[in-house]
Length: 246
Image (cartoon, rainbow, N blue to C red; front, side, top):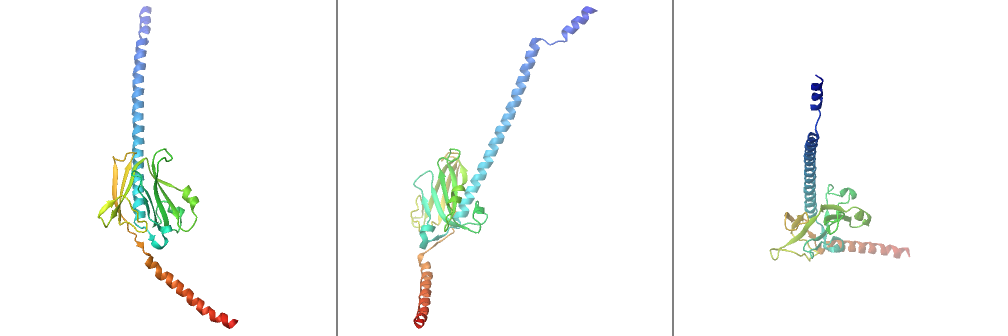
């Protein structure tokens, strides 16, 4: 009887082979769980990046469309109201103009009750993340607002691959790559944007109509003449009084 009990206790223990096999199975399960967890994290990151990219693209298009829809240009004050478009760089264009922006325009909280602002769209080759990024800046016309302008650049798109602008020429009936007439506005702009650092894949193209009109100098002349005539009448009315007083 004692020998049988001794044999039973010996068979209840695990052998070294069984322990090694158990550890191997446990390791495989841990690796499988880790791979699933890592895949979930990667998928979540990719989804968040895609959602952030779509949101930035939508905001960028909205900013361009809304600002171009209310361009202001007065030919008498071209130093303030000039429409500047630099397209010498075939990959990244430069666009700057004056627009009457709505109150809910991005960044409008920095300029309360001042809707008339100069808006500039420019691509910085090396942004904060070391990649090209499309930046929008706003500044006032008649006051020194350089501090706010420098401290509040708004990054619209990160890792942009293409920012190109074409202009519709009513004379030739074709799209032109340059707009040298800074004292007039093009009727339409064609915007081409590429993302993720690629200029040929995943392009977005849109045609934006410029609703604003340039005010010619002739319309400013009557106001100037009226002011001069008013000043002349005031000086004439004051001269007899001065003579009588003498």
